[in-house]
Length: 222
Image (cartoon, rainbow, N blue to C red; front, top):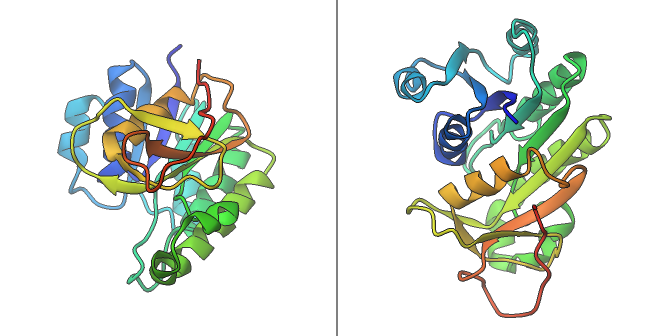
């Protein structure tokens, strides 16, 4: 079933791969961009573009209200450890609040393994580097969970930019840690739109790129 989807974070990385995946599946996609830099490439995919900043609540509300219908909001926005003001919490909070006001059906938030109760999956060295960002991501997750929206939270492992392997899996096991290609994360995110992943928090890894070996149960998206 085709949906009308509002996508934040489509200028690069996982967000760009999600845009490719969604348009290939026939969904109507509107991407929120902070600048014109990626407009041409996204419009060539069939994506509609709105210029705005998730850090500006009024602009964001206006952008969403201008859309006739939004079934699903997907956000991949986030900062880097060295960034000063990180958008992981304030930007996503604004998106979540605007989605509530718009009566959006579902919100899919992409964060990271190490967020919230999956923090124990990280090594102390990795946690020392990522903790400032993970704290912000956790606040965003909690705001979404408490918003009343139907949600799916996807926490990818270490991200790689190579082509999709087709070996990406989701799991509710908070111990899991590993790597995954961005295109495989995008495929998994797109598959959570019309599945039983509602109100679930799921880690995403490539089953052939795990750090350490132990048995875990994968989440069935069928």
